[in-house]
Length: 147
Image (cartoon, rainbow, N blue to C red; front, top):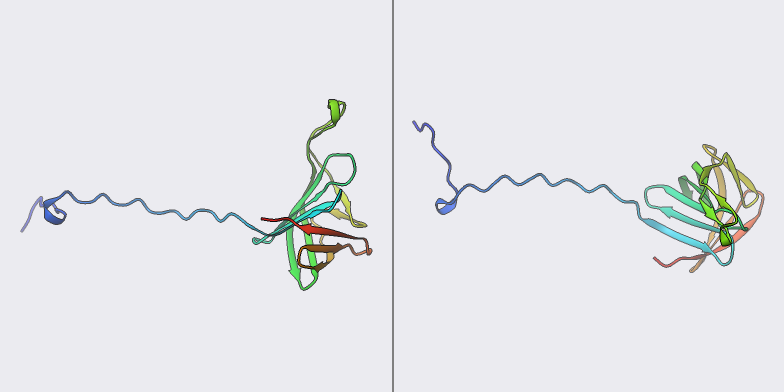
């Protein structure tokens, strides 16, 4: 019977310390597609985790950013906004400063998007461009942004 025996590693060396468990890194969603306007317009990013970001860069005002979930089935893109907000914006010579703020709805291609409401857009994909049309038939062609 061995009492107080110590286990010794190979060739009489000290036992190896226990390795710390390896933790899985959280998955970072990656973009499956990014499209931007040819001039002022909308930017669209679809991510592999089912989330999207749609930015309205039209006009001389703060950008409006719409984020939420999407489902893509064929040429139908169904988006459900979870947040709609205007980004902070400072005009030339700092004459006007707008703080970031949430907004209730925002018009995109002829339809008013609202948080929690699903809207379906029609997509036509070409090699380097994407045409996105709203339910009312208003369309915009975006160009693919390189990764």
